[in-house]
Image (cartoon, rainbow, N blue to C red; front, side):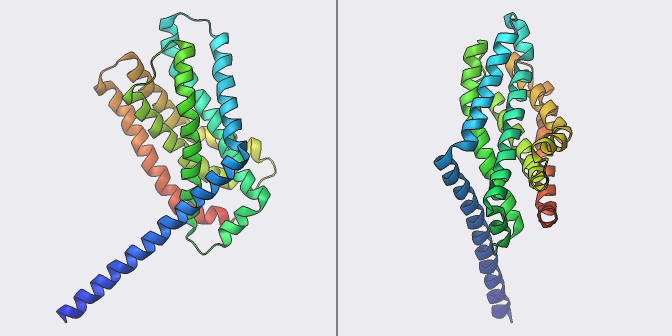
Length: 243
């Protein structure tokens, strides 16, 4: 009996490992599909990057401020840029899937629907991080500020994860509507207020050199937001795409 129980346990572990491997391969295939399609067309990434650079240029010329005032508004301008560029990318990502008919193909594929969500979310996050990697040094030069700090970059990563997590879910909902370009910002911005507020406050804390005890509450809010919305999206994505 002991040997039988051991064999059953080993078989169950192998079965779980196999299912997990197939699940991860499905996610990787969706991410790879998005990356290959984007680097062929450069439609999504190019639009996000041009839009982000235009926004920081406009703010740079519009806000002729002294260095201390610039420090106080810099992180707000930075996250406004990320939020607008990210929303543009989220909208176009799901709209292209819908317009090309590949969204129906993904839904008909014999994979767990949550793998589609994670694949799309990771692809969107990758594109947003590429844009941020170009925008942050450009922003630093234009505003004469050093944004290349480890703590601030960590905040950018955490904020981007939360924004993309909820944005991918809501863009999947809005893509079915005729007014999807208008509907997504209306749905997304109110829900994303906590992550944007925490990102601005934490980024500003690292930029002006506050003590960690003052920054930790905002970092904790970011981490909690990321975990909650990733979990919620995992649970409800199947029902949203079915509708």
